[in-house]
Length: 281
Image 1: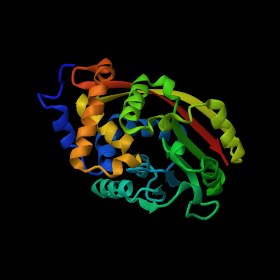
Image 2: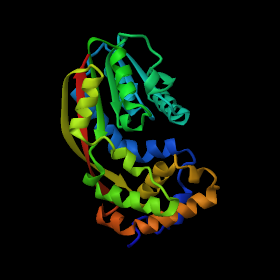
Image 3: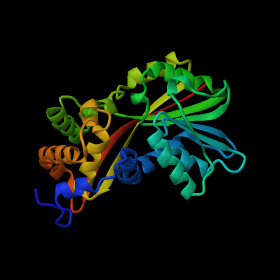
Image 4: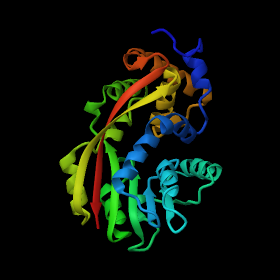
């Protein structure tokens, strides 16, 4: 495949990736995908000024940051995540944007908040990563006021995302396992609805939503995906920086054709298929 990175090699791109995967997430994934998806999620949630809002699995905080711009001086926004690295990026970004948000480290399965506390609970592309999803949903229900609302998003199944099917295979070939498929693990509408009902949530509505993300610099995008998607694999933890770059380059080479198929000019154009679930307490 012809290089579309101004003459830079995949090795050079990999060498320039941030050392913290949370920074990679913020730099490459948020502007192209997670920010516009968060805007849609907030529209569906019908966020109102003055509401108390909780974002569970906030990551680098894009949902919380967008919500904070809309709750007004009487409202509050709290973002919770289990990753201190993600929260460090979230805090820095919110500070730079002049936003007042409470950031808490914690698990969705044991929310550190009292009963009947929030008007709105949000969660974007996080439910699939919780250890006990049913308990997490029950906790989100617990902290809602009567009549409070929940809105969350998950990706449809990996069979709707051929690029990620190829990436899943490539990572598994080099590391013996891959976590890419986990991202798409909650793509069943009936299963998702049942989980909400089991958590005593009412008026459950699940709607499909599609968005095409446009990622600049194809090789940098792919290196970032590899960085994020392999971060939790134990085999990666013992590798030094040079070994990580070599592994990234090898996976990039395996992904040359799938990347070419979704590349036009200097951008990767990737469609994502999403399920938006909303309900009331």
